[in-house]
Length: 174
Image (cartoon, rainbow, N blue to C red; front, side):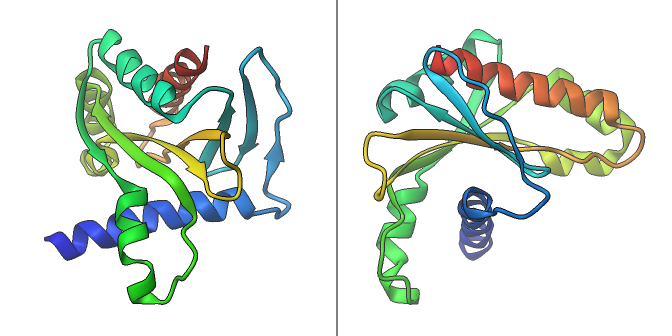
């Protein structure tokens, strides 16, 4: 079980890192600026937002936005700790992250809606927002989340999920 968890965690981190560096024609650059945030890349699978405050502040703000929305944080994955600890053992000599974590949470209402559309959509739970600071960019904090593609006729629920996730991100960087 631990091995499966580590593989899943690594795949999430790799997809986030890949998403940042991907410059393919599928990338839609959104240069929307607000007072403290800039949306960096909006991809089909990952949305990345650049924030202007400290890692600790953003992490606390994400947790508060989740709980203020009536949801519960179900877990925190300490991604940088795991990657920095294991990297050299598996051939990665450079630590990517100064600090990185993924916060997991659930919306019972949206989870029920996803399951009604198609029972296999439960695999999209829990929702996750990653927060990270790169070693190559100290002082710059990013938030990212995965876009969902639900089975069945789930477009309406997909929009609700994106609205929820982006709302938490926006509230966290205000």
